Amino acid sequence: KAKTQLNNGRLQRLTEAGVSSEIKTTNVQGVDRAELPKTPYKPNKKLNILLAMIVGLTCGTGLAFFLDYLDNTVKSPDDVENRIKLPLLGFVPTMENGTGDTFRKDLIAHYELRSSASEAYRTIRTGVLFSSPDKKVHSILVTSAYPTEGKTVTAVNLATVLAQGSDSVLLVDADLRRPRIHKTFKIDNAKGLTNLL
Image (cartoon, rainbow, N blue to C red; front, top):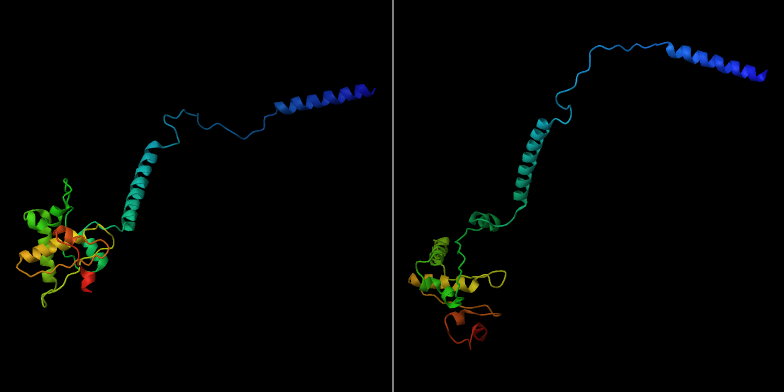
């Protein structure tokens, strides 16, 4: 009897499930038929390329200006004047000498009158003389922060162009560590500035 009641209960539930599955209660209606798209909805390649170009150019230009703002190297004579707040007297081009003849380079204003370096030293001479129009310049100091920056070459050639302009010139080598002017003029270095002092 219990098995019969159990089977009847199962049968009744199966019948109810079948009836409820046949009842369709929905409020969804088809409005339009779905169409296959001709192009993909995403990504929009043209828009992405255009935005990438705009952002890339803007960021690249901004980065270039920012790096230029951070750059503190000296590139022109105006940069020198702006940094040290003094007038620039002139600049000397790099003198490449393949033979390694330092004597020739030290006296380039004497041996090569038409060279660009000689002209540069004459420009510096003019700048020095016109830097003080009220008083005559009596002494000039040539110095630098580091060795081998051209102090001796500049001092010797500047003295040479001043002497060529009919001025009397006394050239004193005050480099007590590595004096070299005596080698340029091929004179004895037995007595020097320290003996005089």
